[in-house]
Length: 115
Image 1 (cartoon, rainbow, N blue to C red):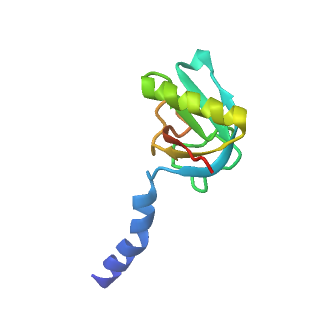
Image 2: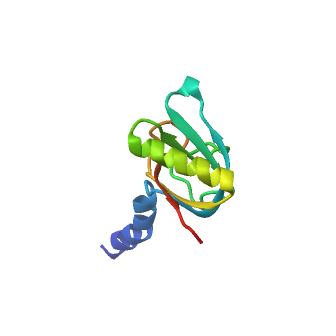
Image 3: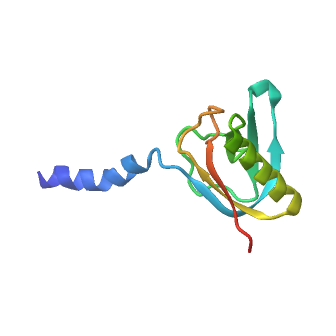
């Protein structure tokens, strides 16, 4: 029983972390791509990389994807464009899944800080 408990306690953090969303804080937007042939989305490249990537994120070029469907999505894209133009830092929090593009984590939150 103690052996089973020891194995469980050592592997639990790995199992729990398997689908955890990532984030990139205080990073500049380096590149935005609007690939019309892939659907209504924007691909986001940041100056910094995620420290850890979720299992489905295997793309080495882009940090996040973001759908362009709702008014909130459009506001987030506008904020990204403004940050790109001004050279401001952004904080992007991932969703923990690859919804728009199968090998890029979807962005859930875009935050701009006025520092």
